[in-house]
Image (cartoon, rainbow, N blue to C red; front, side, top):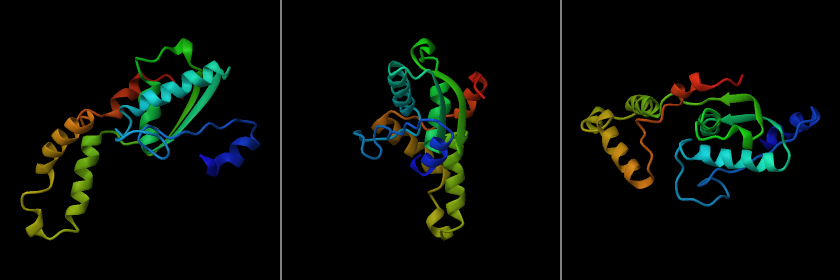
Length: 155
């Protein structure tokens, strides 16, 4: 966000940037690519409303875009306690974490010798899914931000 500070301030907007739990300077052991980070976003929105901020736009890139989408479409959000979300700028969110994981594996197959690929690849995704679910509670097969788009009424 800081690289856009001059642009934002020159149009008489304020800018609020933060690190999600488990990122940057924030505490936490794991990131969940938007699943739990949406709660961080809602906490920030509640804080901004208490500071008399009544309207916001949310910009997120990659995991931040997924978080903005999931948070804005969250059924857990009490709209009376947050600023009005006037717009979303979603830069490079993934549609489905499972599909993204499969695409990444397919792209790396081109770089690895065939002998290494026997026994790995898409067959490893269910094992990774189980390990990730056990370690941090993220089910990579069920993180599908694209399914939440229909819940949005924000441009």
